[in-house]
Image (cartoon, rainbow, N blue to C red; front, side, top):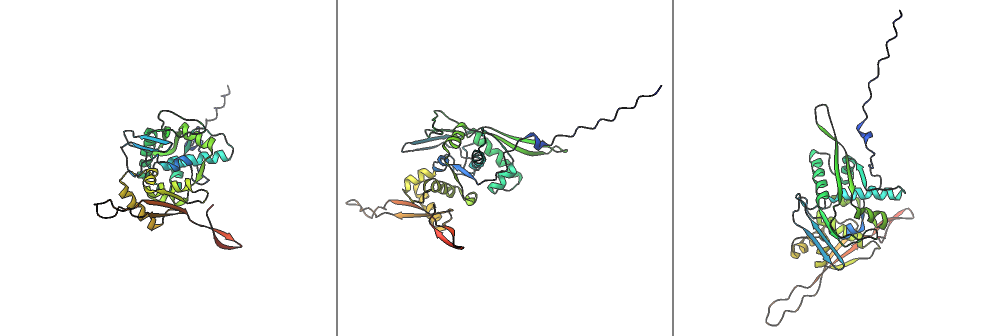
Amino acid sequence: MTKPPSPAPRKAAKPVPQRDLFHLDSPLTAAIRGERSLMAFPFFALSKHAWMKPLSYNHGPVSIEVRPSSTGVATIYDKEIVLYIASLMAAKVEEGEDVGQDFVFTAHDLFSVTGSNQSARSYQRLSEALERLQGTQIKTNIEAGGEGEEGFFSWLSEARLHYSKTRVGEKRLKAVKVRLCDWLHRAILRDRQVLDYAAAYFQLGPVERRIYEVARSTCEDGSPLEIDLATFRLQIGYQNPLANFRSALKAIAAADAIPDYHIALVEGPAAVPEQGKRGRKAGAVTVVVTPKPRLIAVDGARGESPAA
């Protein structure tokens, strides 16, 4: 009897590469951009570390209340993640794609865009920032996409870090998955009030970042911004006394380090003292923010033109 041929050995199934399990929205190929309301108003703590106190802004028709979670309020550095997501979304909108609220990206690309190093500490800070963005509670009467909201929302309604493991059990971060809040998603998708950021933004300190954002959202048409010191302090979100803010602004104005804008403090005339009192009372201080001239090509040469 003839022995039937042995079946051909089955080939072992190839493992599916981890990257194929995700549809990545990164890398970002366009500029960093942000929604105008997030530029104009103080939604984030001006701190490098956890800020545990509530924040509030009430001026004119705008009100904002920000409550911390057990890990604190989202900071101006945590905002880098929100800007990165907003930039991914804005790029998709411009390409005519249908854009949902879920985004998947690599930490490597986020760090490359924001200028962060690839150290273990950077990955730890990323995890902490995502936790604060998800835990911080925001309430505002600013409408987004033609709709208002009552009650609180978080910047991210979902935030996950997806890992794989090496043969020795070490974790390797493969992707970050987040879900953007309804409020910001509507603002970007419907209002289309999205402005680009200067590349040097990520090298600025907390107060300088806010000054740049307020200037960028206000002086878009090239007109200067003139605002009294106390109101400017509120808009920046500076939590220390007004005298400290004045000193900080003087140093920033002297350094002239705000990308695309000059900052100046104009002292008003000193007030005449009341009868029986000595000395003159310091005058009111006005902050003047002026767009810097931009260099443009003129007949093959370099010339100056007012910022558009």
